[in-house]
Image (tube, rainbow, N blue to C red):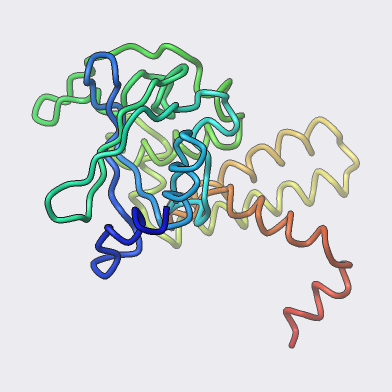
Length: 226
């Protein structure tokens, strides 16, 4: 396997662009990236693994949804710096719930395919909301509150985070369970808007929380103070 890995021109980048194609009909499903570890895992398991730039970690395609990609072949381009893999796609490839990520005509904006699977069932509420917020970056601020909020910049985004944190605190102090839930939902949404503005995936927050399971709260606090 090392001989195969050595064929890649890693000097250009430690991330290798990967075009993913349906083995049956040659439809282009998506484009992603692999580092050496992801490529090694993909070669050894014949299941697609990628390096997520937003999650900043290796991820097995379909790890949460079960919509994995079984790899039939690997092809390297003439410059030894781009891969084409042909796969059997179980379920859908795109986080929107569509078969392929390439469904929007650039000039007209026309959508060429329908959603096959609910994105919420693929990724859960938090990740789906984050992806929706990311999608709203290109929406019309006159018709989308999220797009309007993002267009106003950091000060407005952060003002809303502070405002919603305050409203949650007041609901807590009043011991109003319904309002606490409502305001916590508002606060979560606005924190996700702030994260999306900086392209920080909520998966990275989950990774940080998981890291903290292995140390006491006092030790974690001390590690930040030092």
